[in-house]
Image 1 (tube, rainbow, N blue to C red):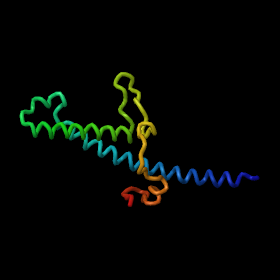
Image 2 (image 1 turned 30 degrees about the horizontal axis):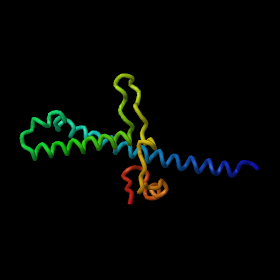
Image 3 (image 1 turned 90 degrees about the horizontal axis):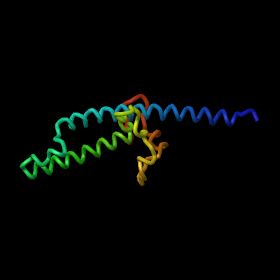
Image 4 (image 1 turned 30 degrees about the vertical axis):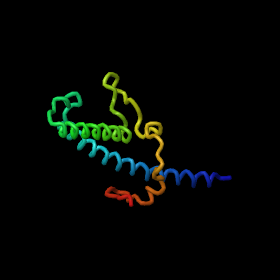
Length: 127
C-alpha cells in the first residue's frame, strides 16, 4: 500500500488549508478596518433612547435608520470576527463564522470559486 494516496491527499489538504489561512487573515484585516470605521460612526450617532429628543421628524427618522444600519453592521462584524467577549467572564459569547449564526444562504460562494479568483499576498480581488 505504501500510503502514497494518503500522503498526496494530505499534502493537498495542507496546501488548501494554507490558502484558506491566508484568505482568513485578509478577511480579518478588512473586517477590523471596517469595524474601526463603524465604531467611529457609532460615537457620532445618538443613543436609541435619545431619539425622542430630536424635534425634527425627518432628522429623527434618519437617525433611527442610521442606528438600524449600525446594528446590522455590528451583527455582520460579529459573524465574521466572532462576537465580543462577555463583560463578566471575558469569554467569547460565540464563535466566528458559526454555521448556525450564518444562517441559510442561497447565494453562497463556493470556496473553490473564491480561491480560484483570490490573489494571495494581499491586494487580491474576487472577480
